[in-house]
Length: 629
Image (cartoon, rainbow, N blue to C red; front, side, top):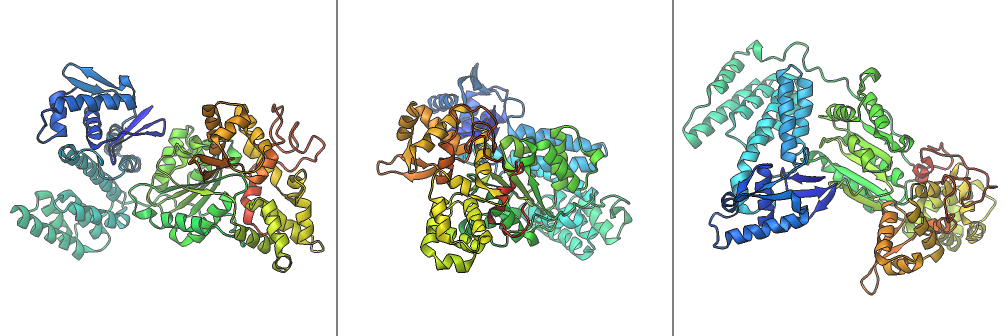
């Protein structure tokens, strides 16, 4: 479905994929049609919207812009009707329409005596705004159309503030109202809301000063006195009128969220300085953004995505006083419903009150998160469908998502990609886990172990664990055992940590063509390859090879590796994954899990623990002597 947005930059997406609408005038044509969606907009009205002084070729240019829009949106989307045009929009496909619907439902809830429901609906409506409306469209059109849109937003904002004051949220609202009044100093409703919030916070003198400042401004700007409602409020504040106090029993905050402890931080977390700094900048500025902060931490199996997310959650404990919620999604098989139920329980919702439908659970979850300062870690996501209902929608509640793929359908997320370690970080992790004295005594052997582990954090963790468990053996002996490619994956096993099951789970969901491509690329051997070389190895057309590479990249199994001397994009299969992939069966005849029929290792190989929650990957940087999670 095409989705149109004008409550911020003018944007179009098709099932989550951005559609390019180039040119300020073209975006203005689209915006003008959307503002009258379903109605015919005459040629003359469109020309007037585009140009303050129309050129002689205005109608010709208009037809060219409409024709270009039809090419990118699909011909049936914009229809010619008489002497004008009309755009067809699917229900729910236009952010202004969704905004107005939520606002109407919120006002109805308030009128019906359901203020908490009203607050959630109005907050959701305001969350659709992503900046100045119609950004990127032609100036003349924006100048005409933007004020009416801004007025709609401010009216809903003032409704939301009224609901918040009715629920006695005045301590939380003073800063919000003050910021809005600074930007809109002539709005008397905002001024009255600030006066009431200050008065209820015990700041009577400041409330009266806000009135005096408003009277002076109105006199200077317009030669007017404040309206009758504002004057009545000023007199009531002077008199400490009891009618200004919150209604008895109203506004006691929802039951505060429980603050479950996170899984313990990793005592020997190593490397990732650049990624730590990047995500930390996002978390630091989260509360100042108008839109929620969402960061996808992606990478192949064993790269330490969970370790990084947990480390960040511990580092930022003081910034999120209302809690840091860690949700392990691996146990849910891609279904968001169980995770929503667990989150609602942590947010104080009794089990009997958890709604039955996913939509109602998600709505209640967003409402419960509204106004909190909390961090949510969604660990081990399988796809966009699983995480969308779990996004908070609240600027004060950023979300970190770990996933092998980059979740391209979450188009507004920031992204951090993890790959193999740099050689120096590999040796450092080996040192911390295996023992500084032993590793420093054999630096060349340690560097070789790191290389044979493909600089993969989980493999290095396992190798270090083997060193720690065998103090009588040398680093060189471990390097020799890892040097046998046919046995390397079997050697990368220490206690309950094992690399092969992690690789198996990463390959389990592949469609047969992608699985075959992974097997053939693994048999091709190490090194970079371009799409043309992949097409030859796979015996496929270039287009098909590019599609298969894309599918493997989305699964976190193939990495982009820059361009070659000819300017072609190149890719690589991580070393250890390549060893695993080359032994994948031609035709999958059983589940791709450790010990399954026809899988690497053979049917006689002892089955490893199923590890359904993927904790081996979480423990990439964990203490080998401590408890596994």
